[in-house]
Length: 93
Image (cartoon, rainbow, N blue to C red; front, side, top):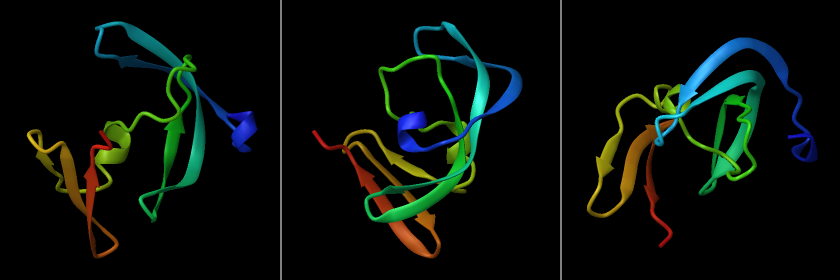
């Protein structure tokens, strides 16, 4: 977090349930983080997870800002509109 130049603020205990059904207790978040993905710029709050295994995990807090999302599980794509542009995220593998 500090290596990225991000400041965090305390939040009251926020529980996140991960795929293994374990609960992570979140106590910090970074506010109004601007980030880029596939040449698109987004801005959202990031929850600080007690793990170093991932750079960023896109979750419901961000997804709900996108409005309607179309998932294609066979082709591993995610399609949504962002600032009047149709965005298609595609699996890298």
